[in-house]
Image (cartoon, rainbow, N blue to C red; front, side, top):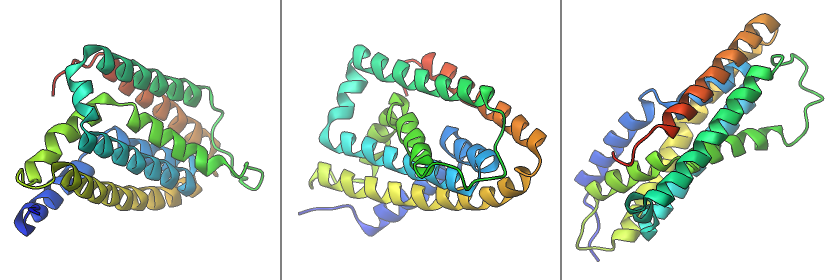
Length: 211
């Protein structure tokens, strides 16, 4: 069975790292939440984004992303669902009174809640689906199992995303611990995060069905 070569794989890793570290909605979301809500929130959101990437790569390997690329209706549903969720998060952040210094009373499911945020905001973004549909095939051997190769590369991309974003969330959380002692700064960060998510939601809603 034919697979991608080591040269192809190394090229994939280099290209993936450039995509991951480039400023974008996912890493900005990790940084913003880590700063305003602390290390666990940032790391939870990071894990959610990585799981969202795995969802898209799985869809791409099964050929389902091609449906989104070909169907304006499917693209529209995913686009507006994702945009609506981002705007919801933005409004929620704008209404927040800021992160509290006391964390002992936080429900046990808080970290899972941030993980879910990251997952949903990523998984419902059709532009991410189209990105993987165009990106992954460039590094596979067409004579081999295309779906299996895309699954392997997609898993690698998700692992690199998880590692990079978790580190970002971890270190931004340390800054957030300092900022939570200053409620006015924390409230300002919540406002900034809110406007960021609303802006990203509007941008997604206006996106056209093209790369």
